[in-house]
Structure formats: C-alpha cells, structure tokens
Image (cartoon, rainbow, N blue to C red):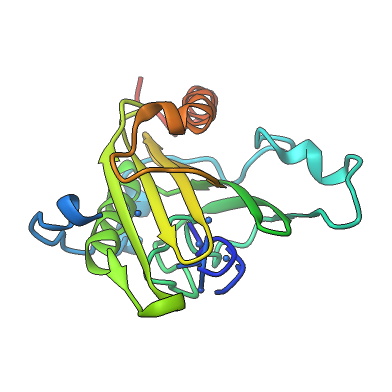
Length: 228
C-alpha cells in the first residue's frame, strides 16, 4: 500500500505512506515468526502460461481516469512493472518480483488516497512468493518511526480468492485500509484511506473485499491465470 498521504502523501504522499505516510499492514500479528522473503526467479516462467498483458479497461476503476473530475482530484493509470505493490510497509522503491504485467490506478485528493492494482506473474509459484514477501515486509516493518513519522500495521487473513489479507495502516495524520488477494498467478490490491480500528473488523473493509472478490473472478477469465 504506498504510505497513504504522510505515510500515500508523505513517501505517495514513503509507500499509502510506506503506500499512507511515506504513496496505499500489526502488534498481535507481528509476534508471529518472521516470514522469509522470496524473490521469483526466471525459472518460474516455465511453470505456467500467463497472459502477456492486461486487456484495456480491465481494472474496475480504469474508466475513471478519462472521466470527469474536479481540479483537486488527481487520477493516474500506469502499466509500469517496476511500481511496488500498493501494500508496501517498508517503502520499497522498486518491484523486483519477476512480474510479467502490472497496472495501477491511483486517486489522490487532499487527504484521500485510493488505489487499485493488478499484477500478473509468470506462474502461481511466483505469485505465492510475492504474497510471502508481503507478509515478510509487514512483519519486518510493522512499527517504525517516531513522533509524526511513526507508522504501524496490523493484518489478518481474509476469505477471498486463493489467499488474501486485510491490512490496516496507522499513521500520525491518517489511516488506511487495504485488501490484497492472490488468485492463481495474479495478485490484486485495493487500498483506501479512512477509518480503521486495530481489531480490523470485516465491516470496515467490506467495499474493498467486494472489489477484491470481483477482480478475483475476472482474473480467472484471463488465460493461464487460474488452473480451474
């Protein structure tokens, strides 16, 4: 989630700010044993046949980029494969996860940040590695900084796709909610600034879970993404 606005505006505004403060996930969760970060290798390319790219208009919010918007609203769409996952608590600047395609939609307006991202990997193994790396980053960077630069993350598993997490980001001036889902050899991320409490109730993530579930179904329509 890039740090959303001081954690999406302070580093989207450091990525939502690690992607809401530094730009969009954990005290009890952070006590779990650290997860080893895994980087996908070129060998994964032979594991499965993934689509070469994403069809135009594939993202749920993609059409909004060319739609009407107010002067203070900033919308962007990029196919850069180097852009880190929107769940980015450690504020990594460049993605190095062997992805084969990526598309990211972002919306920024004052203290509001919203993001949608879909990443295709050359194999299910590579997509699983990306999720393990995300969990490792959440554990490593669950709480950092001091004073106005302090941020923390909490996360829980969520019943969407093959595997998913809902993540709460807590920053000095803002908070963020994120859902990251893996379906086959693809990963999708949905993030918004807004109210979230430390228990991460599903009710606070419902719109994001709905979007993640919709996208998980769409991803299986792409050739090579899902085995079923």
